[in-house]
Length: 380
Ligand code: NDP
Ligand code: MG
Image (tube, rainbow, N blue to C red; front, side, top):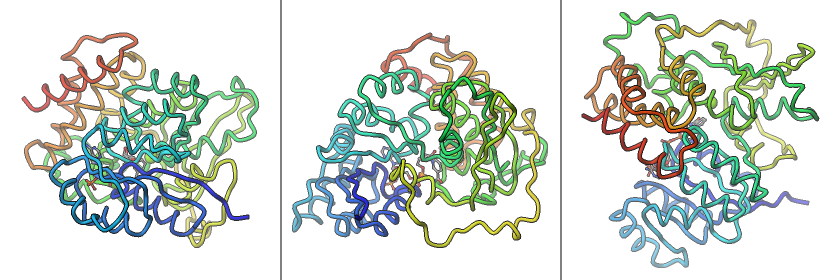
């Protein structure tokens, strides 16, 4: 019998969103209830005509009006704004919501989806970084699963299959490619321009996560994401240049279980949609002979000190991870516009984290206020 699954994809026009739809194209049993974009209505229209969702959301209001006219010959409802994104996240028949929007904009629709008892295929790591304590509690209360899409977290999740007792886990070994500037020191990074930072050696991703990979901010966000997904802050980062070992779990008897594969997001996305089943995947076999050696090194947290700041945010909790995340979102925006130097990204994050007093156990409004204050610090 063909596998059947109704899903909604938030951020369907992005890197993760389009790869999710490639999987849906392959497995006809996956049907699409809702799609969303920020403003790319040309691609969203094509996706809507192909997958015939009940509803599409365009966050940008003007673009939403344009799409409504373009889709007038169909029954597809077009909604807009954050309210519209929440509607896309809660569309009645979807069983799982793939959260592939970028940034803290993922937090609110994910919470709404959980309240509507949807499982979450979580790509948007910023959701757990900023609101992990609220999101994991709500998921428990509503009996929904949060299935990781991020490749490292999928690897950890896969390595934990068969582990019956959480207390047997000693620590998580989170791998990092090291990005395009691995081995460089601070004085060599002074003149980095966006084009350099956008060239990732192994992965093809959206602009923000690509810059974050080069600064190791992405790894910092992933450390915090891992704490919420797997309930431990015993997490060690290892630079693994080949991106073949996607992460590992070390158990109390020192056994280490790893998940390996080619660097491609298709498998983690597919596993989040088909779990606990596995479905065949064309191509993408791992050729061990091609990778004659697999190497592991310690990250350089003096040069790429955003990773150290992320560990501090993890330790302090409260709104510190939000300050870390939102300062980075704003700083990367400025860097991509040519208004901030590369090393300025690190400085701005540190400034924002020190500019605001911590709040323990923050509410959603505390988190959004911390987000606002961090952005204000960076943009001013
Ligand atoms: P992209 O930039 O490629 O795509 C982002 C998507 O979100 C697009 O559909 C975009 O619409 C939409 N979007 C942008 N801004 C907003 C907003 N303010 N509100 C609502 N929607 C918005 O990102 P990625 O696919 O690379 O990443 C998505 C998430 O997945 C991120 O959290 C990232 O960290 C995570 N992730 C990504 C990986 C990857 O390989 N790309 C790997 C692991 C995790 P539009 O096209 O109209 O701008
Ligand atoms: Mg990752």
